[in-house]
Image 1 (spheres, rainbow, N blue to C red):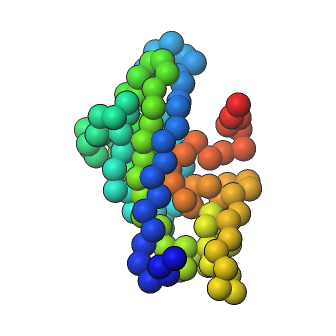
Image 2: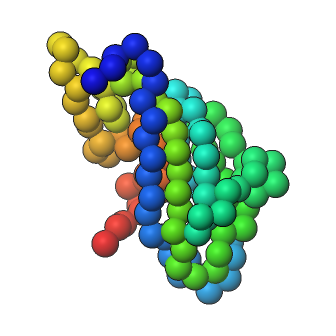
Length: 118
């Protein structure tokens, strides 16, 4: 695996809004992530129009009110990750640590202890 350039991490997941209305959705991330694309049901979203991006958070302003598919493409550099969270390289081996909030070092996601998945 190449260790000198960023890795592209595509992520697709099924999301659901339980509120019955469209409310903003906050996704956690990390300053080391480089967002390459964000999609809802295959439609590309536009920064500043459909979502806002800060150093550690991504806010989707108006996600669908029911079930939808969220696609997120980020670049990461595990070989430069010294936090020992997410995907990192240690002693020549690639390792992952996603408990309790390490997944946000790989891609934007509702990565908080209060968010339960099924």
